[in-house]
Amino acid sequence: MTRRPAELASTSAAGASDINALPDPVTLILELNHRVKNNFQIIVSLMNLLKRAMPADRREDTRFIEEHVQSMSVAYRLVYATGSMTEGSLTELISEVLSGLRQIAAITEEHLRVEVPATEAFIGLDHAIALALYLAVLVPPYLDEAVATAGVATVTVAVAARFVTVSVGGGRTTPIHLDFLRTRLMRAYAAQLKAEQVSATVIEVERIRFMLERPVRLPAD
Image (cartoon, rainbow, N blue to C red; front, side, top):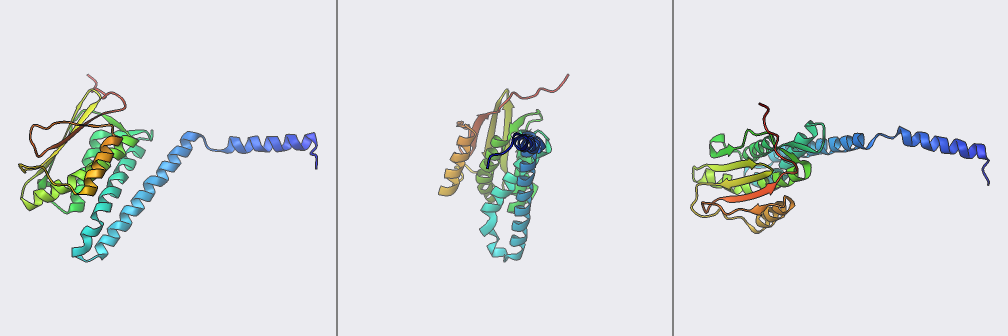
């Protein structure tokens, strides 16, 4: 059936009205990331409930997954809180991810020393997730070693211009052993950061360096 010109004009106007009624891309991205953040929080809560219901000797079974989910959740939450949905505070990201890993390991603050710069540096969402996961893979074995030896695991972060250097070490004179899965994942997350492995002055330290998307913001005079 052939439509009359008036009908075509009416249909065209209705279609244009529907398009104009759609939210703008920024609003859609904010809503999408808001839902992702909330879903991560739900998953974390469910895992906490599951862990509490499990016998004490079985709680390690979920630890690896919990470390990853919790760390990704921190990255999304911090970036979402900025409102821009593109980047978040590097210092807050590292501090909160490490605090979460320590709590999952159920150890006290005395077994983990964190040194982060006071410089205001920002990291993009993609890099934030990769860095959070890198720490989730590498740090837990150092925490376990610190508890076993009554020692301290140390995470040190240095920022110069657009370069970030992250060092993870302990009190051993030999490197911490990482199993096959952790080794593969650590390399994969470092690759996502486009990071280079930096030779450490002490053998038990893992050290990488990567570049931020934009220069560090210097404090105002």
